[in-house]
Image (cartoon, rainbow, N blue to C red; front, side, top):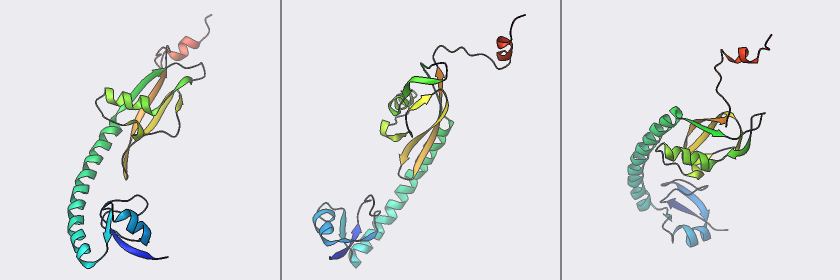
Length: 168
C-alpha cells in the first residue's frame, strides 16, 4: 500500500482542516483529493503558500466565531412558547418537531433551518424543554421551549389550593 502526504486546501470531514498535512493512500489522493482541488502535494513551496493562506483564513474564522457567539447569546435569551392538544396526564396527542420549532423561530425573525434544530427525539410532553440549535461544527446554542396544554386555564399559584379545597 502506497501512501502519500497531501496538504489540504479545504476542511475535509474526518480527515483534517485547511492547511493540515495528512497521510492518505495514493489512490485517494490521485483520484479524489487532487483532481477536485481539495488537496495538493505537500512540498516546501506549497507549504509556504498555504501558511500565508492559513493566516488569512484564521482571521476570517475568528470573526465568524465571534459572530456565532453573539448569536448564541441571543438564542440563550429566547423563550419560545407553544400550545398543543394534550391528555389529562400531560402527554401530547401529537408532538413538537424540529420543523415546528424552526417555523416558530422564523416567525420571530430568526432564520434557522430545520436540520439545525437538534432534538433527542420529538417532544411529547407539556412543560419546559431545552432545544439545541446547531450553528457551526464547534458552536451551538440552547433555546428554552415551553409546551402548554390547549384549553388548560392559567391558575395563579395562590388560588390553586383554594380551588381544590372541598366546599362545606
